[in-house]
Length: 309
Image (cartoon, rainbow, N blue to C red; front, side, top):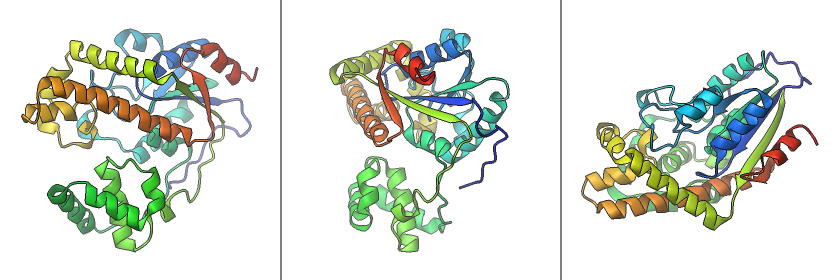
């Protein structure tokens, strides 16, 4: 984990406020209201809203919302400049140092738990691995599908198997390449050392009843379709192999364009996979003991907690 040296004084009154939660729960609007109340700026930790080509399918803040509060890490780079969690953490930490020189609060908002973890806790130092292991695993994935990789991880590292997103081939391959190369469990390299930020960190997660949340998700997908999600996805066909496009809303349309199923089925898949993604997000954030859970409309409750009331 790269060392991070802060210029913010220990014991200062600087406060980082994290607003997390599942997709479509209302994180953007809550973050804006909190930032307006505290007269501060917002940093996103949404791993897809970074990219300017993904204006519709990632539901970034609207132009009107961006005018209300200054945002960072929103549509600020191309998908050709992909930003992983470790690099994001370093960029965000550097920016936060600058912003805390002139304001006492910052709001951090998003749904990408890994990026939040990288920023708040830091990343473990993983060994350098010969590229041949990843090449072999990618070939196995292409020839045999994801199931054998899932089974191998379950056998060789049941602890990480219980925590990883089993439908994310990149995560499986990253773990398995280290396991094969080192003959050690991937979980043995994790959580070695946590970063301790020199300012107060408050983490809030928003919740809503499942049926209402699912309605919000379906409505968001319908709105994206009205705004031109299909056209946006079609414009990105040439880039579809990029990791940033292995994303709900795009990968389903790519399959539709390949003739794998009908448009109606494509839309149903987007809604279904969005609901599944929300469940995975909730599972991730529930494992974080530092998270304080508030109803998605309880702005006053969150503000009182921030102010220690």
